[in-house]
Length: 57
Image: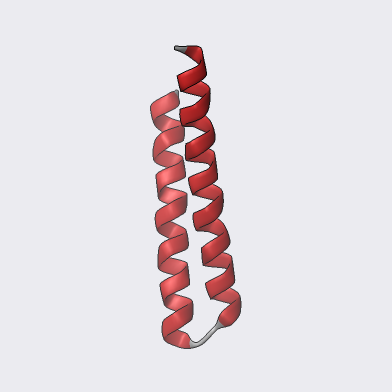
């Protein structure tokens, strides 16, 4: 199950990156901000998962 969550978080980061770039190209600030928040959320989830795994070991 951990692998599924890791993949899900990486997909969220990539989706945010694409959304942010799309916002930059089109000049849409709302898309840029939404993409940045997706990236940050995905990275935080990954960091939390890594910390939890480190504590377990």
